[in-house]
Length: 398
Image (cartoon, rainbow, N blue to C red; front, side, top):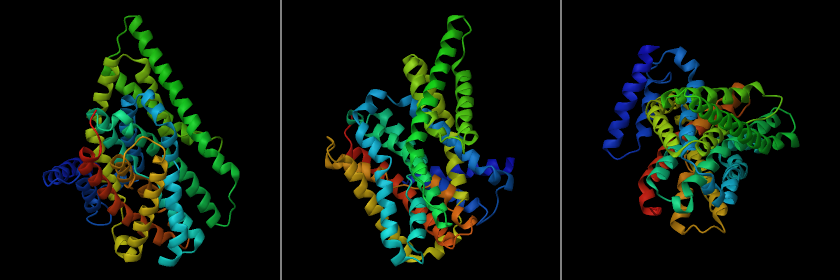
């Protein structure tokens, strides 16, 4: 296992640095490292690492969401309330619609299977989007109109909507029926996630304040460990409560970090954000190399041109959905174009659920996985490259 970790970190960083030298996003190097080292090419990674890959990826995502929460101001979110809420479900709905309309004509699937495929492909990747929005908030690009905050909030909730829709469509493909209660779980999951996280953030802030008042000073490094441990519990609570009530653990983590920032002094929240930023240096490599390792490159070759055309059509529909969310806002054409670009990348969700239809024995399983793999390879680099290359041109610095 130690050899695998060494390969992940050292090769991942080397490839990321090489990509940076030729002005490509670092994640391209990390994804390529994972694909090459993974079980479908050189098979150099320990099966033990691969068996806990999903948990390691979630841990890495928790770290960047904590940094994001510690960088967010609620006053900024209030400015973009309506478009942020719409971004959580409208673009994904448009993309699913594209698959339902066109996939049966282009690919060997029926309407129901096309809906399952659309649900797998519809989620934006928070792992690609969130770090870049945090970077924009710190460098003050687009912050005057709260553009990074809006995209970050939308991307954080988008996955919840897509996973609930995916679960419903898979059940229907297996002969089940859609229930209204399944769709009610979406707002319930979001609301309870925010409330649970807010309560945890308030209790942590109270604990730190009480300790300080009693002259038991808790070092910032210790606070990071406590906050991280609490975050793991919040995400675990989502699994504990499964089947009882829906709660979004990842949204709870972001909410907790937001409340912790509100209740802490500016110096403390800044120091915590910096420390999570340093943790992200290692977590980012782990996350994207393991996403790459989950990609079965063999299926890309089987997907064919029709799959590429379907992905392109779906992205056009998705872009229309994003543009619709921006209607009535004060954003100019350049800023709206940036929002469209920021909502292109797919990676983490597709790597997590792309193989589920095949594991359940659905006839469309293989083609769904093929299209999911191809979408990751096209959109993750495209979105990252688009954001990194255009934010200075399209967004105004405050």
